[in-house]
Image 1: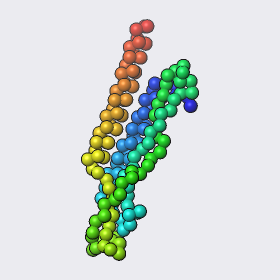
Image 2: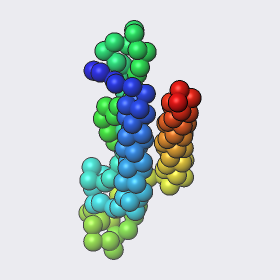
Image 3: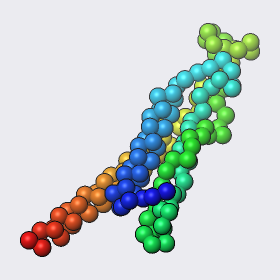
Image 4: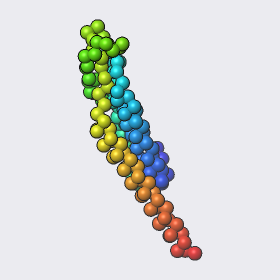
Length: 137
């Protein structure tokens, strides 16, 4: 794998955080989803990140992150007795997605802060590069 420059590193990091934000949005969108079976109930998902190193990491020192996979959390859905619900099983139970709204909000804030920090670093780098170029004129 070849990582061209620090902008490539930042772009991949920002892309990984966008995937993280999308998984949070998916979890929040399915927070109230119900199913008639435990297997059919929505389970919250999280991205799994992996470090990727430049093929010439010894010379460049560049590394970045990529999303390796998106996996469901090992969390059982809530079992709720609601016999009048059309999806209820034979015993009158439905299964609701076990999404924790507070946990998702923390995850969203952390991902957006990391995205913003990377964006600020790139912006600062561009400003410094522009100043360096103008010094030679």
